[in-house]
Length: 176
Image 1 (spheres, helix red, strand yellow):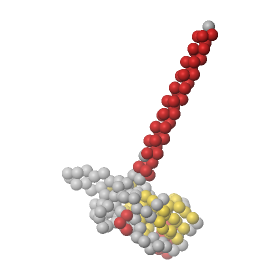
Image 2 (cartoon, rainbow, N blue to C red):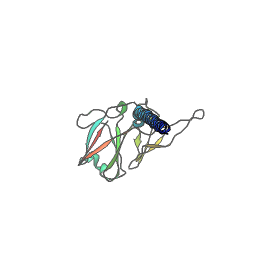
Image 3 (cartoon, rainbow, N blue to C red):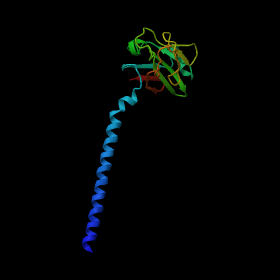
């Protein structure tokens, strides 16, 4: 009687330990996959990494449109350094999407990264268009609206490269 009870307890302990080992292995595997993919989750674009840093004073006349939602502004030079912004110096596009919420995108078309052009904002519009491939982008989300495709090849257009925007009073800080 005692022996069977002891064997049952022993089997339960073994089962408990095996489940802990399996749990630990599954946890380690999931953490490895999460950390291994973290860079891919942050950068879902074809635009190569470009360090960027600028401060945008919302009180300056050049940036008055940023005080109102849905009015994007194209910015070519960094403040205060005066360096060219964006990939290949194509600039950035900043817009207020909601009260105190701002979006910033690289002005380089992800379909034409080697072209010497940048996407252009239609006056007072939330749509920007690439002059080279004619792809239009919806600026509140940076997503492509259309793409003219060649007859022989279908194109997959990535969204615009986004940059984080921090609001510090009357200053927008774009740093990546």
